[in-house]
Image (cartoon, rainbow, N blue to C red; front, side, top):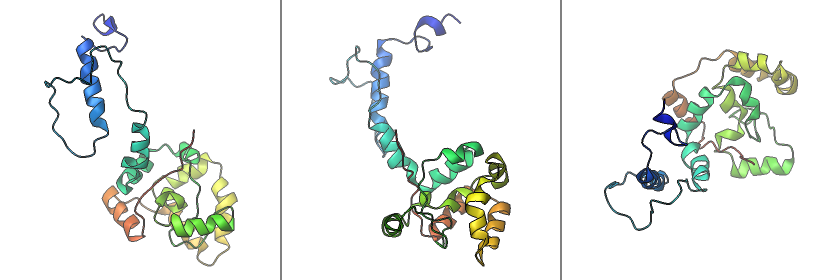
Length: 195
């Protein structure tokens, strides 16, 4: 146990050279293409006395570029605990990909949805519903989906069929699901993050 308690990081044999290594690796985080990394090269920019840190812009790079792909979205939704679905920061524009049922709070927002966000999978509730265990989620929210959205959809001719599909569909594997999203005209999944 004592080797792990030798420093605040619980990192055995952590030394000042570890700071240089950590900073060098952190510099490489924001590079999206493979590039050579010479760990033995000397660097005038890094000091052994620098503190270890990550760029403040790196989380934004992840959220708005690397984690907005359809593959990331599908994988992320499937790993999301169903009780946390309601905490996703999404301002939905439509219930379904066919845009039969609008959800925007104003007419101006609905126009923006159509003009700016049509290819963003995060503005469609169907994107989420296809990739969670719907029955477990509906039970965890005590049926609020049906009370607030589903009952309204059920009044339309094609509403009951959509609701039955959502409640009983089988999840495709990630690659097939991404292909379905692409065929529906979706190209990204960008949530509205906030502090």
